[in-house]
Length: 581
Image 1: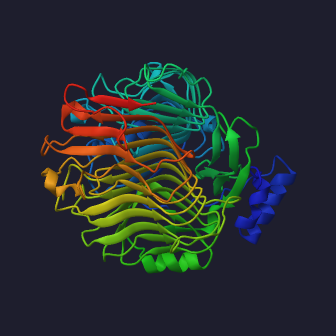
Image 2: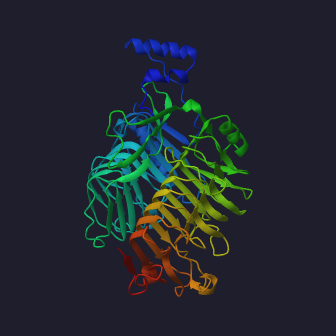
Image 3: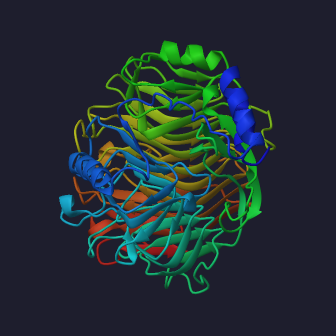
């Protein structure tokens, strides 16, 4: 692995003539530099330059927000790229929009005005503020506080907030969320947030809590010794993680992707060093795909030739799987790039190989049932990937909501040592194509591989077990899940003679497993008489560890009889929250 390369190291990405000119520039500082051409990212990528008029930039950003503010299930996808410099603009962020700074460090792009996500479109209820993200920039909020009122699938990564943060909108409900590798100078106020994961970040302080606030590898995390009042769970160091790869510019203006190195036993941000550890990959080594013109065949042809893959914003309708067969392949989506199978096929398969990096992609089930949307390996394997694991970053799944969708499983992990970092696996509970017998599923995620680690696993509303974990040595840091809302009656939802299916099922044969900071909720609004026997099912054993588990009957609408197996008080009307330390 190597640090960021200086401009002269990018010569191999240019033509011989350009390389010669740049070489002169490296040797003589007063030589005129040649600017590399901007890649063709398509019409849904907006590239902003600090030399542009602030008024022009603001108009572009305001028009984009006006279109996307309430566009929850629309097909539009956008990425806004900020070249290094200072911007005197305030950005309001709507659905399917990614803000990405192109500097080598977050402070290379400074937004003097702020970024805001609020929920005026939904009466200040932020529980449907999904599918948006901000990465690799710094923010100076105009009023001292950055408002980020979001729920799932709305990550903040590698940002510097020069002030405070507020995670709700005027007391309206919110159900997030995820922050990683970020520096918040002052206080984060979680407001009404039901749950939240903060990982490898530095912050001034944190205030407020609801049910499940988890901090992994965070400097200045709050004291958790009085759990559950407040319900803070602190893990001092992150055992093993790779930060998400990101698009950036080198000193000559050439586009590249920086892939952070794998890190072990860490606390705090990754970018405080002058030369962060990682690998720089020129964008010339990527196939830049466009939803309007590319097919599974064209993308697979490029992957087969050894190209990495950059998915520009859009919805890719696939009649066969995208096949990741070469070690160390990078697949990076911009603007919540979306993969949708159209022939009952798998959307993507990743072979049982080392070092794949997949980030920023939404898998959206098609109307014809897919057995699985994303699959790692063909079957259970004995191959170790401990030294170079495959990593997932901000990878989301949806079955129904935009339209009728069907998928038996959303993701199956057969490979070992996979690391997941912010996954939302969602069977739609509102929108289009929604119903007990309409958007049909079985499980959200099935883990057969050993030594799989998850930071921020959100799995909701599937018909059977939400999560099935069959592999050994699994580790989960933060879990959030809701049972299906739309169970019509108890006989329709029975596991043999047991009421309902646990959200989190560890296979009976498993002997080593740990999960920390878990919340499982029910809201049986179709029939409040429905009961779920247990939020979690797992075998007994000295190496099976569940810590700080919460079950909630939302609004007293339905019942979770036990927290884990036959242990724990009932969450029900009049006693809506139950816990197990």
